[in-house]
Image 1 (cartoon, rainbow, N blue to C red):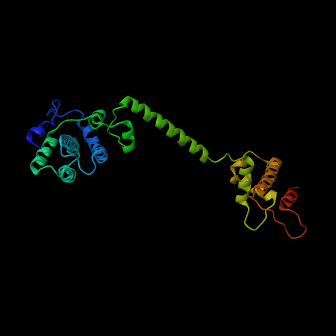
Image 2: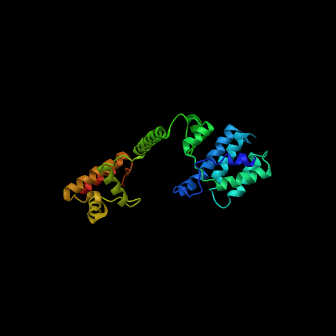
Image 3: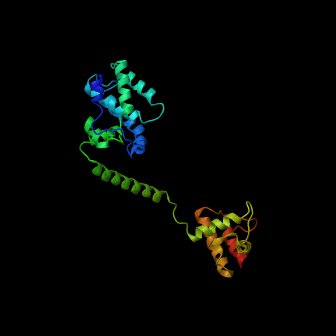
Length: 250
């Protein structure tokens, strides 16, 4: 790359004055480098061409890399060595100096125009900081918002499908009873009511007397039907525990 050729890559609108948006440009530079690597691999293969297009591609990449931090020059050397092995050592030095001196900032659609990036190609390569020549920034924003809306709809649908069904009052009561029944033993209905009156089950807070006893009976029946509670037979007359529980409540 000659000195005249290097100067060609310093556009007339570049100035030495620090731009007020420089911090934002520095933040986007590392992401731009990643996107440019994707474009170059897709468009040129392992190496950029040894012509003006290749020189320009190098200049764009180097300008962005120059904004990425203290290790930028080492990365520049690696890029030029592997992507532009045809460039002489002198021209590499000139190219790096031009990149560090440059204040040029390309917007997304400018880069898309320079490298002929269509929206289909942008999507296929997964580019985020380079636009497209056939879909402008406003249209891309509409598309992004629509995709975001659909993702949110799918997320809400998954949440609804994962949501546990409402637990009925009989189920809550049966669960409360199963929690206070000692394993391997049977407690009659009055004993269960006594336990519930002590405030061990919020579901029974508003029930008293016969109302509470009737609720316990219904809970036992529901628990047996749902498989939460099991029928057992006591020694003596063969009788299901639910019936024994009702007898004990009389």
